[in-house]
Image 1 (cartoon, rainbow, N blue to C red):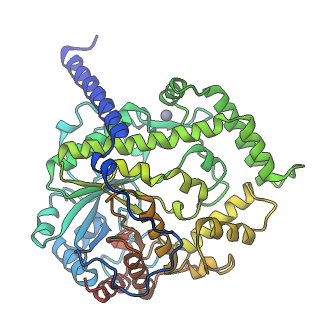
Image 2 (cartoon, protein in one colour; image 1 turned 90 degrees about the vertical axis):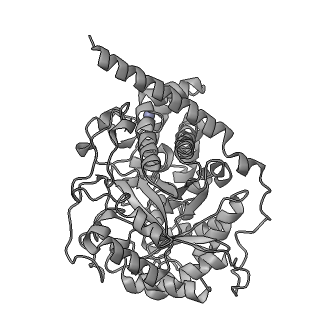
Image 3 (tube, helix red, strand yellow; image 1 turned 30 degrees about the vertical axis):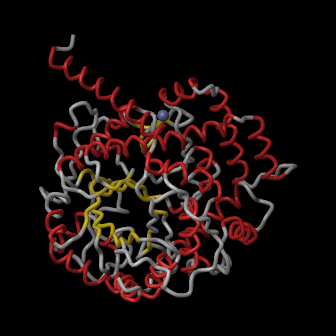
Length: 520
Ligand SMILES: [Zn+2]
């Protein structure tokens, strides 16, 4: 029998879960009233040529943000970091990574990559977790409570940085991502996704109420306990269909992540009239189909036709994919509402995974018009340098599953056409040449045109995002050209990505040079 304290705690947890559901419903269905009532932007073609001068660029103060991990502040000192960011790149918005278990946002340079020209000249180990103090009152109802990152002692990337940044006129937006280490998070299995074979996965389920509560608790804590100007979340994953097809830029052949078939998702599907058992059967058949293609087996009708036939036999496959990304949008809505409740002035936005510039399948799911209802800004990842090797890998992946009758070069050409890119490198040159600044401009214009109303688009600028040592490496002129392209395409700001600790100062200075040229 639970004692009375446990009962009270359970009651308060249940009440909070109900509130969370109500909030999520409100945020997802009502959205931002200002965005709904705003005047649509003038139509801008994603294929317009870039402007050749800067006269059309707004004189309004430009939003120049940078993503930065706590490790850099500890290694280099808070004031020295801020000095460098202001001097080199005129940064006026800090995005400190407040929660992650991944090296993309936390820690020093990734081992194996050359150390940059600043910071401690040694590789580090990361544990990950929260890089800011946890205020227990916000986690009373959560099954996840113990996740403070231990490696930097008591350093608090919000409390120890925000006031100093603000004194200099810089804004502070906390940044977090879906990068978990289940082994290090007690109770993670209670919020985890489950794959089509019943295996527990490494990320959370969007429909698990405990997972939603955990995310909302963190947001409420950060935005209540600190004087923040905003927040950005990175939900860097896609649904089961795209993953099953290996439509990603990771190495092919890893186990295909076909999520989520947990009890919450099955219940939600049932309520939506989707047959979960048929979906499960369909995804297992799809998984076998991909395996056969990858093993080189020939089918009479070829890969594309046989895939389409499978989708016709199991329309539940598409229904489950749709359920997945709509559930992700609900989480955006929940976090938007939670942040606004804690601090109505906070600007809340979303990092959109790099794949949006490569995969038509993923791009179709990222409906910016719908997303804008629960956004104050959107950051499409227009990473042109690492974009070269990543795009090449993506093309080889989908060629080997969906489009086997074409050569990889033909698949690339179709993608350039479908996505609206011109004069980009052929497949043999793509990994070493990277994508052009024009790709940044085109994706910026497309995003601005897709977002209704006043929601700004801040393209992500790639500065030294790791690639193979024999692949495209960032140069100062690349950064300068990408920043110029983003602003000339109409963006009111940029987000320098993905973390300061891996950026060379000489490359960061390329951003500063562009901004000076733009009169910032
Ligand atoms: Zn689930």
